Length: 257
Image 1 (cartoon, helix red, strand yellow):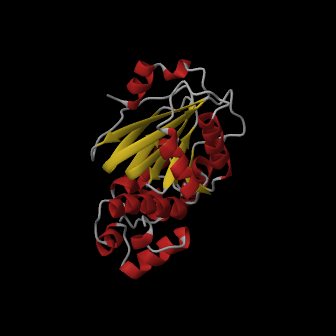
Image 2: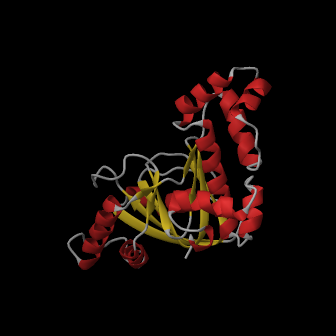
Image 3: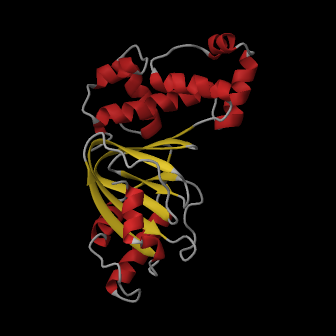
């Protein structure tokens, strides 16, 4: 049963409480199917890694991160490893100052414990009770959480989309923008211009981000860092580690610790 059907069956969108929390466990490779929610959604997993896809792009969500999904965004969640999902649904009409865009956030130890505790709260909690205060503190922590660059934007232009889909399928691809431009029958300048216009990134930045998100999924699966480095088109593990550290400030082997 998809997450959307769980939501629909429990009729949570009609709850008069501004914040409702659910938990569900998924096996490796499972998918929620494409769906959307009438409320904003803080998607978190205390174990496992989630890959979230939408028309806007994709996000990798490891267990030390969460994804804020704006209300109405059609998306699909795929599981990497066994996933213990904890989801906070927030009424964006009643709760102000929430993130305006879908984004990955850092989960502090306090926010993690608040999400875990909120799962135990009755859906009929009093907003003036201890449970109500817990929910409000959860939102306060969400508001101050750091936004992280774990988003891979997808273009709409069919020419650039072809390049992006090819790089996702084959992250080790080393074609330059000039080589891609010849294959597509356009100028190199056009490729660079469209990448910036459609994704907000240069060609090289987008490819590096695609490799990073691929690597995060493979690291979560327990694959060797040296194999991941080669799969991402790097000549050595040290070169890959240097790139990874530049983005996240830590080595690949320490990312999930």
